[in-house]
Amino acid sequence: MILYLFALVILASCGLAYRNWRYGVAAAIVVALIQDPIRKLVPGTPGLLTMSSLPIWFAIIMGAYRVRLLNPKSFLQTFPKWGRSVTWFGIYLLVPASLSATYGRGTWMITILGATVFASIFWVMNCGWRFPVEGRDAIRVLSLYAIVGSVLLIGGPLEFFGWNQRFAIIGAEALDHVWVTFRMGQPVFMISGFFRSPDVMGWHAATVFMIAVMLAIRFKGPWRYVWIGVAIWAATNIWLCG
Image 1: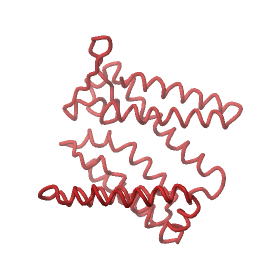
Image 2 (image 1 turned 60 degrees about the horizontal axis):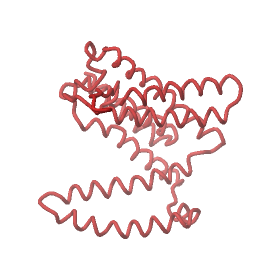
Image 3 (image 1 turned 90 degrees about the vertical axis):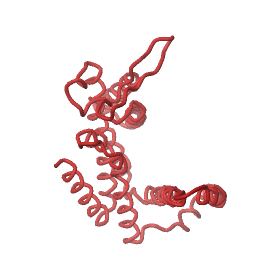
Image 4 (image 1 turned 135 degrees about the vertical axis):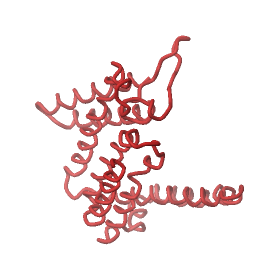
């Protein structure tokens, strides 16, 4: 049941993104953050769910293109040095792409997937360039990520105190994984919380930390202390994940 509900959320987010691509960015962020705990609740924990936000990003690109906001030529002309680097990088990619496509049976599909990923990164950066309409737009989307990410980081302390033994949504047991690293010759069991692995939890915690520090510098008064608190909370989870 939860898989069908999540599929409906993704479908609705795609529709929203095509209709208003800026709202779609917010939807893609939320879906990307909740996809790991949803995956743990689905029987079989299908790996395809790690790509849940991908169709939303494609809808964002199409939505922005629909209102004629995407102009690759203008984008590259605005950043000429970066544009030249992208051009040369694209030419270079033809070499590994030709090797990948002819490496073995079915490897052409991997080549197409790689080309799609590289192309989508360029288009998403183009969307990011056109995203802010007013000064606070970027602040709003960063704040959304930091707030939702902070809520999901609760899974780190919960696993530390053993709640992963009671709830499959916490830790990596649902994925049949145990993450261990070694410090001073002693094993340290790494913590993933609501995320699918400790490195993913650490990545999100580090991103929340950086955003919180930037917002703490930008804001004054009570909000500065709120973002300092968020930064401390995120740093704690970086330590917890191992």
